[in-house]
Length: 123
Length: 135
Image (cartoon, rainbow over all chains, first blue to last red; front, side, top):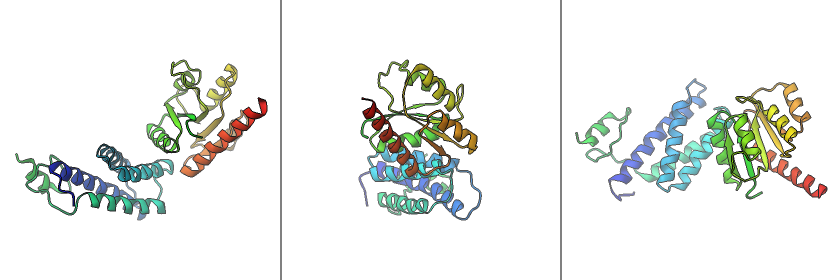
């Protein structure tokens, strides 16, 4: 568990949130239900950039591999995608454990977890 | 293959981004262009970058000039660069035209990242062999 201050928690929280969007898209691909790729690709790119800025090279590489697969193969289901999704989830989970950021200044707006950001904004 | 300069031409920025990332990881130097005119400016060094292009990886459907027209322009200018063509159009006549104009491979989108890397390495190997034979 990394407890180096509020910034670390905020980053982990953001990355986990982005990871959830990507996971939802991969699940949709797996179940062969239609889902537009744009949100997943956007989050994948943002996650990659944030990981790069934070010096999380392994996470950055996983995101990059996923993006390459999705773009070059035209967003098709692929076993490697599942494997990379698994790696991504694990890598993100390692950054921050399941800890509620309530009461901390996350500054992050989440549609899935509204209570967390309202409490975190301190407004 | 380290340090070889590859020019990627595709009007889809996402494709340029992932191809660039893939090739940079393998140690290549990469430039990108989003249309045929920008590609020609780089290939003829009109952009002033000074770095000669060792391999051209271009999409067929591009603004202003198609991939084949870029190849024709290079032939006209006397610039010898190995070319790999990519296309989402799987028309056999297009593939034939690409090979007839001297393209070393025709990659049909979507394709495997590994297929691209193999095509790039094969093209650079072939180009090196031809250069060695001529010299």
